[in-house]
Every structure is written in structure tokens, then in C-alpha cells.
Length: 481
Ligand code: SAH
Ligand code: SF4
Ligand code: F3S
Image (tube, rainbow, N blue to C red; front, side, top):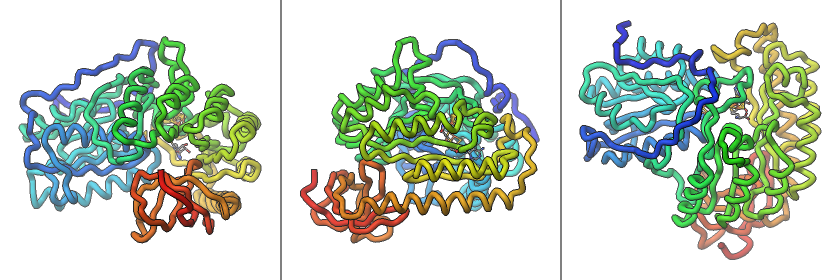
């Protein structure tokens, strides 16, 4: 493979380094002269994988493209620019992305002018980039999580050049303010409060793909929330890999409890936040959540494992007992709180007994819902080097058992909603049945209901008639707000 001199290729080893140096705040987004209006009469398509951080990044990509004049395409087939915003968290994410990239070959053959680009977390991985460069010649642009703001210049370079454009940086990262954004939702918005992660859980690729933990200034965040409220948004979700560690990297003596309280005082109707790492969860945070009605009583609190030895080897910095202590403190202080979790089964050398401890914890906590995964080794992370005699069959069986245990307990929790009235923020007609409306309760339960005179963005009291594992059915029970 020919390596061009002006390429910047990723280096995972470099990406895992951390220094104490200050983080730069950049708010000078500019479009270079050769990119102004370059999208007039043209269209873009963005395909997004992964977490909410990526969703929010895609909103920025779309915002930048629209600033250049591009409109949204109906499908990749009619797009002039196709961007795939990738996720690297587990191996199957890579397979899906490669499958999609493969399917774009046809589009390229029919229209060789199309610019097909790959961005996001997977672009930060050396091996993935090598594979794309070697086997997917129709991918003409590769950039990473640190240089989204350079999209206008990157596109201009890709259009002018016969060569492929590859600029990926493995650095700790900056904080960019005032980038264009096209929000995909009209009533619910994502608000980044921090970027990156410094926890380095031994199985996880995120600290390498997203750089050092960088908190945004509180004033910038609050300004964004106020603006959203003014624009008619009713819900914000504060985003970060570890929202509870917010502010620890700033000199301002700030913490998440204070940010949450200040956000609540903006008066925006619903505030959510994710993800909460148990390690940094303080009693003060719990008190703030309990005190403000507009902070939703829903907490995503990843457990990962219920076994203290596995947790230690995962580098999670809490024991099973400490997790349970925190869980109990939350449930005691916040009335009607819902708690969901993430669990990994089959971490290297997880014994039957260790897995049993996870099941015990799930039974003790009775989570409202759980996202469960089979451990996927990520090259370059410490866990990928650990010996693992446990077979994939055993891991699959564990996942199945875990799912049936949490499903059954979650259904019991859902049943408790039958006969109650809940407040639902309406998303619109249900995907499956256009005659039915759907939305979410304060505790983040999906509700499908019947009603009249209701539109997306309304908050409606709904009487719950029936419960399933993943959703509730109901009927409108009063006027909308
Ligand atoms: N920052 C969040 C998690 C982000 S990743 C936190 O610390 O809680 C979302 C979830 O993916 C994790 O909670 C974990 O359960 C899962 N995950 C991460 N790396 C994984 C891996 N290598 N294999 C399987 N699951 C993984
Ligand atoms: Fe990954 Fe751990 Fe950071 Fe979450 S806290 S993003 S699991 S390293
Ligand atoms: Fe995936 Fe990157 Fe998010 S790896 S889960 S898109 S931070």
C-alpha cells in the first residue's frame, strides 16, 4: 500500500498517553474560502453507529454540511457526500460498518464523484484504518473524533485531490465551542458537558478513541441549555462518559452536583444525564436529583459485574458491596427512581461463581432495564492481553441466563405501573402503529397510548392499562401541557 506523506494516521499507543497540560478551548470555527457554498445544490447522507456522543457528533457534522449549503439526501444512493460515523466499542460494530462500506461500492461505481468518508471512534484505530485503506478504495476520506471541525477543509481537499484524504490525530483533544449543529430532535436535545475519558477500564477502547477527559465550562453549557429552552426544547440529556466526574479537570472548583443544580434552575422541563460511573457518585448529587422536580428520577448506573474480583480486574474502582451501597442510597433518597445498568459477561477468566455473583446482584437490585454484552477484546487494551479459558458457548449461555433473569424482574417492575397515571413526553406516532402515540415517562419507560389532539413535544398524562417487558400501553387521561 502506498503511504502518502501528508496523511496523519492513528496511533492507539500514543492515544493512551495523558499529561497534565491545560486543555485548549477553541471557539473560532471558520470555513476556508475554497469551501464556502461548496454544497449548493448537493446532498449529504450520514450513517451513525454507537453511543449518544456519536449521535451528537453527527448533529455537528450535519450542521457543518448544511452551513456549506448541502441538503439532506433521501438515501445514500442520491447523496454527493456519504459519511459513516463509526463506533469501536465491540467487534460486531466493526463488522457492521465494514458491511455498510462494502455496500457503497455500487454507489461509487455508478457515480465515482461521490465522496464516501469514514469518521468516528473506529477511525481512531490503526488496524481498522489499514483495512479500509487496503480493501475499500472507494472510501476517499478518513478523519477522526478530534477534527470534526475541519470537515469543510477536508471535503475541499478530497474534491480537489485524486488521492485519498486521511487525517486522524491521536491526541488528548480540545474543547470546541460554537460549531454549527443540526439537531435531529425538535423537543429533546443532547448536550455535551465533557469529552473523553480518563478511567481506562481495562476492557474499554473509549479513552483511546476519545482522548483525555475535558469538561466544558459551566457557562457554555448553561447558555446552550437556555437557548434550547428558548427554542422550544422540553428535555435535555447531559452527556459524558462519566458525568459524575464533571469539572474535576477544570480549575473552577466545580462538580456535577453544582452543574445539575444550575441546569435545573434554568427551568427546562426535563433533565436527564448519562453515563454515571459509580465511582464518582456523591451523596450531594443524589440530594440534588431528589430536590428538583425537573431532574428526571432515572439513573443509568453501569454495574459491569457483580463480582469484586472481576471488577478489580476490570479496573472499575468499586467493589460489589460498594455498588450495592450506592444503589441503596439512591433508591432510599429518590422516590420512584428507575435504575438501569450495563453488564458485561465473559470478561477474561470469569468463573461460574463470579457470574453467579452478577446474577445475585441483579436479583438484589431489580434493575428497571439492563444493556448486556458479551465481552469483546479490543486490541490495545489491557484486558485483551489477559488469558481467557472460558469458551464462547459458555459466555453465550451466561448472557442468555442473565437476560432471562433481568427480563423477568423488569416485567414485575413494569406491572407496578398498571392502573397508575404517568406523565409522557410525546415523540409522535408509534413506529409500529401510526394510530398510536408514543413517548417516555419521567422514569424513561416507553409508553404507547391512544389519545386525541396530541402532538409531538406535548406532555400528556396517560393511564397505564397494560405492561410488557420493554413498554407500557395506556390511554390519555387528561389535558396536554
Ligand atoms: N462510560 C460508560 C460506558 C460507555 S461504553 C461507563 O463507564 O459506564 C457502554 C458500555 O459498553 C459499557 O458500560 C460496557 O458495559 C460496554 N462495553 C465497553 N467495552 C466493552 C467491551 N470491550 N466488550 C463488551 N462490552 C463493552
Ligand atoms: Fe470506558 Fe470505563 Fe471510560 Fe466508561 S468509564 S468509557 S467503560 S473506560
Ligand atoms: Fe462507540 Fe465511541 Fe461511543 S467507541 S460507544 S461511539 S465513544
